[in-house]
Length: 96
Image (cartoon, helix red, strand yellow):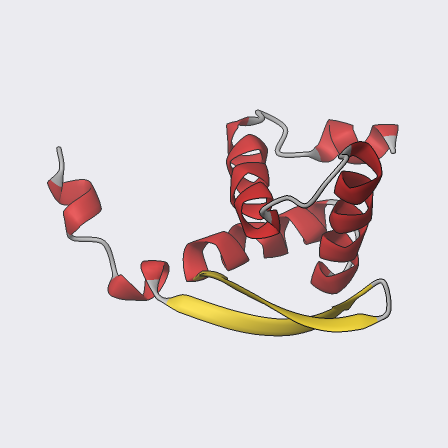
């Protein structure tokens, strides 16, 4: 069973840094390629650009939290929620 995980393509877990603007500020986010692929799917499912999806999530998190958070961890956990959701976000985007 573990060979499914141990023999995966190393490109899936290679880190990639992407630069974008959040609230008018330039920043960069470093994630594994597998997470970038899921974030791309999330953005597509909501009819948004990747930058827009990340900026919106960031602003929603900032509005609902009282202090700093590990945003890259929130992105990773959001990817897991998306993958665990049978409709992969389509109902969430309809409610927005």
